[in-house]
Image 1 (cartoon, rainbow, N blue to C red):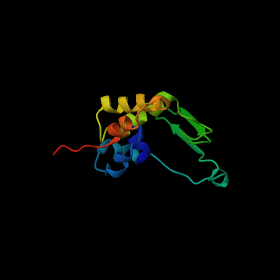
Image 2 (image 1 turned 90 degrees about the vertical axis):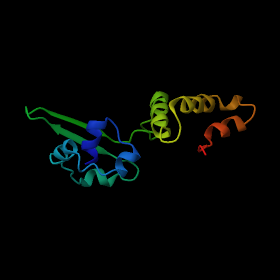
Image 3 (image 1 turned 60 degrees about the vertical axis):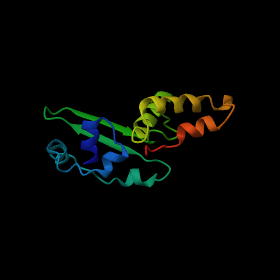
Image 4 (image 1 turned 60 degrees about the horizontal axis):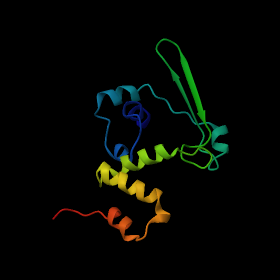
Length: 130
């Protein structure tokens, strides 16, 4: 159901995987149409490559196929700075607000010019309200 979830959420975060989405009728219905197949040829290159092929067939009969030999974010298929920042903000959202996440990004991107590392560690420390 992760592929169905990704179709609706436009991404997959760890929190999505930990939640049981099987009760969501949209996810459940789309999951019924998804088939996963083992491929000896793809497995032969594992773990050097995490190759995946996705084939989508529409009700109208159109087909769309995409092959990715290296997972997004690997050295062979790197993410852009914007993608990294967006992912950080999404993951950090469970702990800090967007403003603080942006402050962390800005400070880390200029790390060599930080005079006192405590500035960064203060931003990174989760301070729970009492």
